[in-house]
Length: 301
Image (tube, rainbow, N blue to C red; front, side):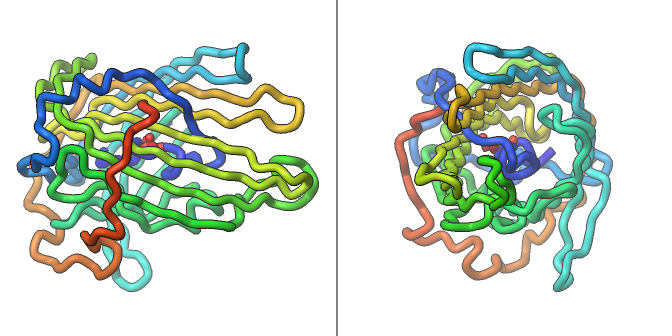
């Protein structure tokens, strides 16, 4: 898949919130020098129709101190294209059970500027207020970070405090290329996988009381050249609401099998980048200290 797992919470599970730290060992990605561009960045995100990835997954979730472990499988495949309003053509990825959330279709466009996410089916009200947004910029550069979205006072799409009114939320997404390193999964060892980290922060204002619930979702994903996503690790955590103890979710998917179809060429290679969305200006570039590490499925959350 391209990156539907890169910010899982924003792509297909916006109703599940955020994350705290998972110690991944940031020094492992130090083999690639900071600021160095990763050659042929687009080759890490194959999207030819007929390409198929099979993943095995594990999920641990529940209230703090009461964790339930589950195992699942997910098959992701590029099934075709779809024309959106205005004539824009996007690539359709179908997942059978991403993050153990059941089947979904996700829509992406890859061109010379990067990869943009255009939503999913089934989607959520919150997701629809955020899309489209860019999830990867080309060329990828080590230590490069950018803000994917930053929306304030929008409809959360859910009444989590039970007073009959949907909560309002501020939500921000950031993505960082951490470097290249070797990663081993059931499908094999990939010595120069690109490690990308995505972090989403939600500040949910409860309508029944003067209180803000904070959720964060952080995902680390590894992409191999010519293969795509080979592994992601995600942690989601929602702070305690009222008298509960909060909720925590850890998700992992690892590649078991892959069949990549040969690509006829990069879609839109000669197309100009749309104004604004891909603007590579200082206001959209933010280098930040990574505080959490597992989300691009982020990934991704």
